[in-house]
Amino acid sequence: MLEQTWYAVLQYIGRDFAGWQRQPADRTVQAEVEATLERLDGDPITVVAAGRTDAGVHALGQVISFKTKRGWASDELRRALNALLPADVWAARVGAAPDGFHARRDARARRYRYLIGCDDASRSPFRHPYEWPLSRRLDAELLAWTALEIAGTHDFQALSAVGQEKPHYRCEVAHATWRPREERAGYIFEVEADRFLHRMVRFLVGISVDIAQERRPADDLRRLLTGGDNREASPPAPPEGLYFVRARYDNLQLEGDDD
Image 1 (spheres, rainbow, N blue to C red):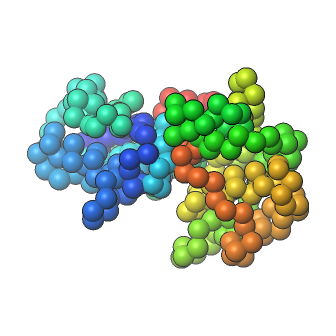
Image 2 (image 1 turned 60 degrees about the vertical axis):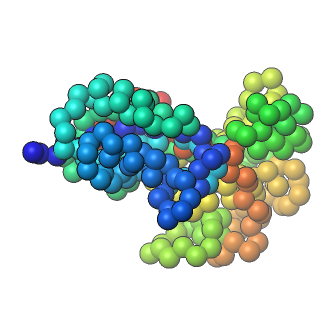
């Protein structure tokens, strides 16, 4: 029987996961999805994600790819997945993908969102698991300046985790913005790039917040965007405020690609 290639768009709460990627002992999103697909299709199935989220990081539009041997209709497969997946993972969309489609290699851009709470209510139990409950004022003009500096092509080695062996550390950031949340609750950072280094978004948020609190000079960001190591970077922002929003593809049209 010929295998069918599929894509799915997943949403998940990262709080109780040790990240996306399968690990020997800890609970991961990949392991949960693969176990569910094995129950449905009868054979082990490997799932590939557009981006590997860390422990505690959420997803609103994580794109995955996989192959099945059993003949499915897309609506039937989506219903079956959602019937068996744990409550903190949900398949928003499932569809047939071109033969050979690979969610990670074929992605031409990925977008992340980070939520910061600046008001006292950010410490509410209904909010703090899903944002950074900073509960302090930030300078909106300085935040906007950091976004302008981040946009473009830079060497992000100094603003990412150590220990990454890469041919290069350049990323092309096509979009970076800070915008206020409703009712002065805080700020939202959105960033889209062709690739992201490990913890890069959290490091960018960390130094942006330090600059917006005037805890370090703005020129530090410009200097760190030229490369080097991360010993002079601000600590990365906590994971609970970070969301994988979407991936873009040339060979697959997903809802929202024209935003």
